[in-house]
Length: 287
Figure 1 (cartoon, helix red, strand yellow):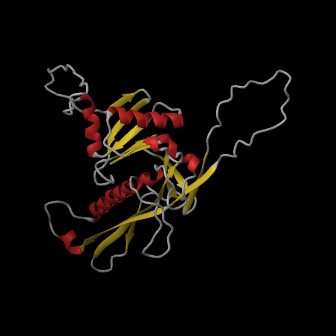
Figure 2 (figure 1 turned 30 degrees about the vertical axis):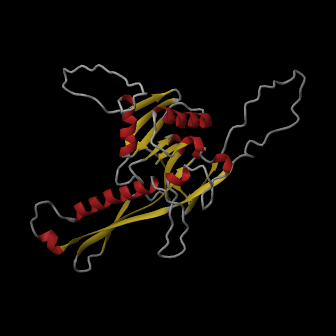
Figure 3 (figure 1 turned 30 degrees about the horizontal axis):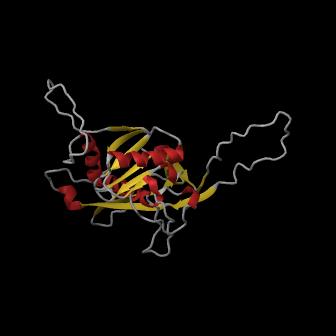
């Protein structure tokens, strides 16, 4: 979902900017230009550390030699390591991890995850300037209702002025909760939609793929349960303001190692970081 780019250093930096407030004063017919605005005075500098991910694989000579119910070979082992490292990266992106500079072999570089970028309070390390932090109104710390989710969208719209292109990456609990907006939840005071559906196909559709509100629509996708911080966490994201950068173009790569006698081996590695171009363009649900 994220655009891809190239990092240039272990601490990748970028600028966050904003537009000035609209001005409706007008200009006099005989007014000369006597002053000029510095259009970069409001730029804030933020960054994230590049994190190294690695998964190893090995196939013994005996595994290669015997017949098994499923194929066990170096290619299969390498493929499995690649799938595992992709999930590692996804979990780090979706995490509440704070960025960390490497101080020892046991304390490596770590990138800041979305849970810390989308935060209304100051981060513990290299905090986002207060003018660019996610507003508290864009963060919901309770099970969403149609009203409270609409409030989150209204807050995001107030900050970005964009009413389209949002994606909710949702844990299973949040996803089910949004689907219940159009059904009964045993609350007698709420109005429930009644929908007539053609039964010829013998299919009953209960899945909600798109939620449309007064402030734009959200495309709902399931977050990988193994990678989400919790089932009751969801991120309301504008992918336009997110990017995944790899260090010097070194994306996911596999390296075969020397067979030292017990079998073929190797590792898969990647050096990546998450770029959050504008924390105010996103929202979060976590309860």
